[in-house]
Length: 156
Image (cartoon, rainbow, N blue to C red; front, side, top):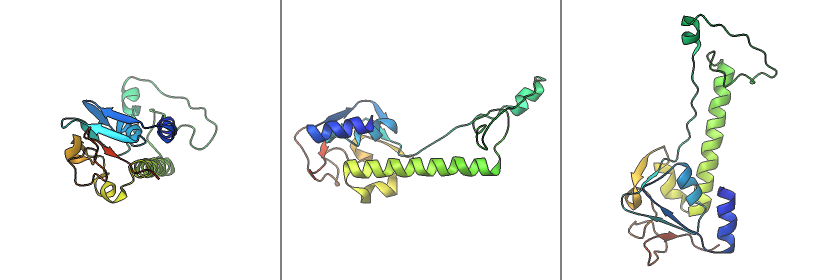
C-alpha cells in the first residue's frame, strides 16, 4: 500500500487525513503522501516494530499433550508455539525486526524528507497530532505550511 500511495503522489497531490488513530501502519502509509493532516487529538506515531510469538509448551504439557514435529529447513518451525526459540532462531527474529524497522525509517524519511527530527523520536512512541509529530503547520519543523493546516513535502 505504501508503494501505491507513493505512486499516486507522484502523479497528483495526495492528502492524508489522520482521524482519531493513525499509529504505526497508518503513519507508515501517510508518510508517502504529499501532505499529512492531523487533528490536535490524533493519536499517531509509533514508529517501531514488534513481533509476538506465543510459547505454549508448558500449557500443552499440563494438558497431557505432546507434539510431534516434522519440518524441512532450519527455521521452518520459527513460529511454532510448542517450543522456545533456539539461539540462532532468536537471532533471525532480531535481524528481521531490525531490517523491518530500518525500512520503516527509510520510507518515512523518504516520504517526509526530514530525517533529523525522526531519528530521536522513532522508538515506538506515540503522540497526539502535531504536538508530537511534524505534520501540522503549527510545528517548528513544517517546511511549507499550507492553509489547511498540514505540512507538505517539498517537490523533488
